[in-house]
Structures are given as C-alpha cells and as structure tokens.
Length: 267
Image (cartoon, rainbow, N blue to C red; front, top):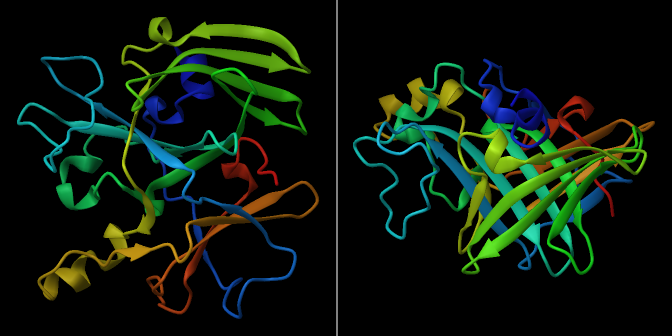
C-alpha cells in the first residue's frame, strides 16, 4: 500500500505538510528569456479525483451533475488533478497538500468549484506522455531512468480509471501494481467540462476579507500555461495570475522548485 501510494497518489499518505510554493518576482518585467512553456490549450481536459470519507460507501464519489458537492454523510479528504490531452499525447498529474487530520476541506470556502484547480494547494507534479496506440501514460524521469506507466480505460467518455501501474528502472519492468487491489478506494478520475487554474489563499487573506464581508480573493491564471526552466538539470515551474498575491501584493507569480517535480517537464 505504501509503495503504490508513493507512485500514484502521494496525497493518500496523509502527512502534515506546509505550502510548497514561493512567490517570485521572476515575471515582474515580463516573461524572462529562456523560459519554456507547457500550454494547457483547449485539447486538454481536467480529470479530478475526489476521495470522500463516508461510512456508507468506501469508494470514490463520482462528480455530480449539480453544483452540490457534499451529502450530509460525505467528508471530502483528498483532491487530485489530471490534465490530459489525448490529441497531444501529454498529461500532467498534480497532487495536493495532504492533511493528516482529514479536516482541511471541512470548510467549504476552501473548496473551489470543480473546474478550478487551486494552485494554493498544489504539492507535486508528474509530467507524462501517452503511448501511441495504447491507453497508457508514461511518467519518466530521464535523469534517474525511473518511470511509472499508468494503464487506464475510459468509461462513458468521462471516467478515466487507472487499473494498473508498471514501475520501470532503465526500461525494465521492476514492479506491477494492480491498483484496485492496492488501494481501498478506486483510482477513478472524472472529467469536467472546462477548467481554469486558480489561486485562493485562505491563510493570508482570511481575516482581511472577512472584515469586508466576503471570502478571500480568487485569482485566475493569465494564460493556463505552466512555465518552466532548467538550471543544471534542476527545474523550476511557474504559474502567473491576474492579480497580485499576498502578503506583499507586488507579484503575480508562484514557483515550485525541483523537489516538487517527480520528473522533468518536456517540450
């Protein structure tokens, strides 16, 4: 269970972690020279996995067609994002900050609409390629020569179910995990009709905005693009937003360092 959690769903480890991003001035004067881009264009779909703690059902809850996210017996404890373009054959899996007390999403203001990926909660990033002719996504670290392949099927054009993970070292299969046997909750991601990368900082703005009678401000990505650059095989990725960020309100951009990347982004 520990191994499959590490490979596929970092958040199920449920350890307490601080926020992982930095606010950076790197884009204060425009896009820096040498910056590369991973553009999340209209060919991408957002698949979201929500895990609820529910005494009546140990499986995942499917995304509902209505705006209601919770039943009385539901307790949302985990969210994971998969941005996937079958047309381009590319994918980005993003885990969020785990919460060992399973209470973070108890306050609904912390949960944005499903089509909004809250970058404030991002933890780790996996960049993958779809294999030609197969329903498989390969996340390969070209430096360590380690890769994980997610074998999946898609039901009703909307549910992406990961049923097997193959771990390879130097191209040779090292371990094969049947996900349904390794996880107590199914590994199903549900497609949304649209998506936007957003940012809402509950911790820094809660008191200020509460006094104004409104929830903390919500910012949106300027361009739904992941920027990245390589400095001696150490990568940093960036997200730009449409409003300045607390606490200093001078810059629009957050960054995640190399330790947050399970493998390297690519062109």
